[in-house]
Image 1 (cartoon, rainbow over the protein chains, first blue to last red):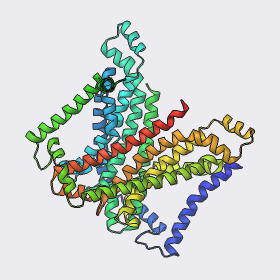
Image 2: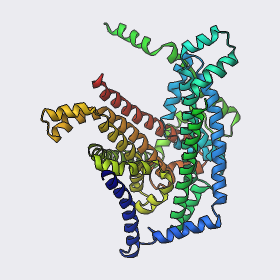
Image 3: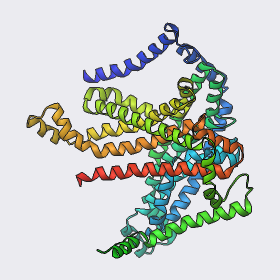
Image 4: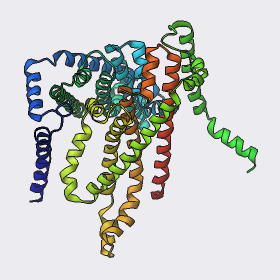
Length: 249
Length: 261
């Protein structure tokens, strides 16, 4: 009974919001320049999806994301591993990385635009910079917290460096590292869409701004819904991958 | 302990091997930056750190920059205050009462998970290009982590404590004041810290998107003028501001988490 009431509220609230939205645009005279009719927005979304006009911008954004993520995973895991090789190095580098990570790094976007221009390069650089930190920090945490006993045991049984890495260090650190990689992916996605919104020539974030500046409200809302959906799909896919990776170590 | 002994013990505490190595890493990075900027990189794109520091004065002498930093600080403070007020009241309403929590918490988490950056142009359309849109965008970034942590904090109170308080005849208000509230404080400060991170992000995103008088205006101006000295000075100042704000929140968090130990 109670569960039913909860469900009822969860359905009623979004329905009521859409109804209010509809009434606001049709009856209460809210300007269409500020708020498009929900029916128009839905129709625009259908049109965007049917014509496939989103393909170019989607390709730009996903390419930037893929390159940025590849760079930050490569650099983050390599440097994270090197920084985790002794407790002294961890004590030196971990606080430094955490301190930089606590700065809103989006501040560097103007610098990156100055260095790399308005094209994809500045987005890739920013996405890679921002997602580098969670990946490097979790790599340090992962390798840094391997039980010293396990390492000693493996060594005393005559494990080589490679064997130690492959059979002791990596399995112990892997779950922590992929958790960091998932966080890094989400952060990279957000910073790439964000930097496209702030200063760019192409990409999904840029498309939303372009439509907003052209006051094409129904299409703008359609693109917002589209980008939110893409982000959700990507995040769910990455969470699945993480769960899969966790099971297979 | 004498003053001198105190000083040496202080020095001993801060000048450990680790701290020296950390400073050496920072010095090395600054040196690489300095050499690269002086010898290898076009001065239109990069200024050496020595010149950036020396040029800080001229950044703040630029007409409008002190006011812009002031406006951005005001935006941060107002957005943070609103985030805390909204986050605390919504968080308590959802945390203390079962039915609203089970109904609305999934919706809150869903909205929290959405990339808010996609609706930044709407904020500018609705709230204008002045401080209002920055404050609003800061609030939507800051309130969700506070709501989520406050709900979690209220939920974390051990049921046995509430049951025994009730058994001793505590009213709803007394249960809140003497059981829930003290337990919530450490989590609340964690929420405030996360909220501050969110507010900084939201306000800075909105500033960088469009700005007429805040720091976003000047970062764009310095970028377009190819003036890396001033740009680095301004960005560095803002980064320092962010570090200080975060450090304050972290101190508060640690201070208020202490009572339980």
